[in-house]
Image: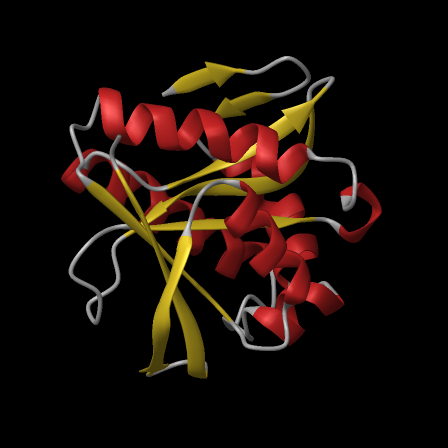
Length: 165
């Protein structure tokens, strides 16, 4: 899958992205808001990338790499979590790229793809209660809070949903 926005390209991850995934998944914001995923080496990052590629081939969606001028800056896409009944929107940026509207720009295109091409009727999102930045982004994208849930990996999380228009 490839999508192009005004400033970004959104593409499938590839093995060459291993160092990027290592850096992203070990950044302070990732560890604080998403959690440690055990990506302790480029080899573990490659395993993670392969799982994303497999998910895309199996269920038709996954996390994708956001690039600006061919430099990987973050991820955005849909995840299938065992404890949720619908796919959920996930996103993260390297710290130096936050606050520039990239997540919102990419998310709009991912959501359009989800509703128009994947024919989904609802997309969920979860975020930690103290992640006000993600909460603001989700609300600006038209997500509404539906309460909170207990997740196996994060503990308490706020649950959001967005219906197809």
